[in-house]
Length: 367
Image (cartoon, rainbow, N blue to C red; front, side, top):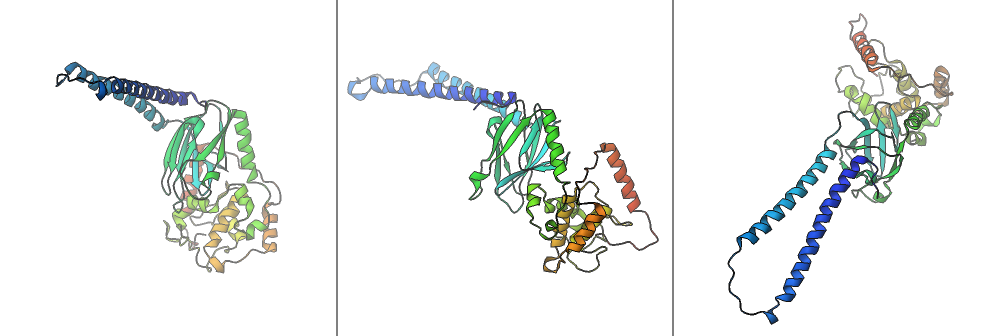
């Protein structure tokens, strides 16, 4: 298949050069062997003097093959260093492989998708992983000649340069179970303007009006449609304090133990946890998450509530209606405007300083 990138053509040239040399050697040695076997077969052989050695011939068959092998090693090593040396400046896409699908997270834009879209001309670095409880997968884009394993609980990388517009197949090249053959998605390389339009559309999806069923069904299909994983969001933003098991054994001593049904500041229903994520808790280290889309807040709240198991209270229609009216969630929300990183760091420092100021009141538990 034709190469989809100029860099990929360098790898193709190395492949064909090495393959060509191997074919020439195979044909040459085979033909010479057949000629000698036929010409000097025993039925025609006469008694000849014993030949004990030939220095020139021995030097030729040592030096020439060694030179060929070293040249092949050099060509292969150049290709190896090309694909294994990660570019210092590249667009980052976090890729997760799990039975039996690929998911893509764009950390700078906060977008999740089940297909990969990049702008033409971009240098892309893929950070690969798989859930700890999953199996090994192998991320393979044949048109770009790149393949790398996605290992459970570990991080690996690959990169490519998207030089040509088009749609390219992505496969799993490591047998991973019964639906391994169906673990296929696509990479779309599009113009910069089309890429920006796609990003805006993906962000806007998470701000669609909420539905009541999402508050009572943790596996509501809308979460999958929007590629929102409440457990993954919790692991990224909440687990450092509340811990992966939700027992509050992270950094702050006063972190909420989500396994206990009593003592919640606002309550353990999804609507209560939604409000906590939207407002934070004054006087504690529990800050607000205004940049979480509504659907993301609900997904995180569902995961937090799951720590209670069978003791978790169920949201009523009245609870949902009150939250919808309070936050206008029956209408399409407007995504938060992006701010420069310097401004974001300044706000974070101020927020942390305010949370750690001495207070005359008793510190509230973190939700």
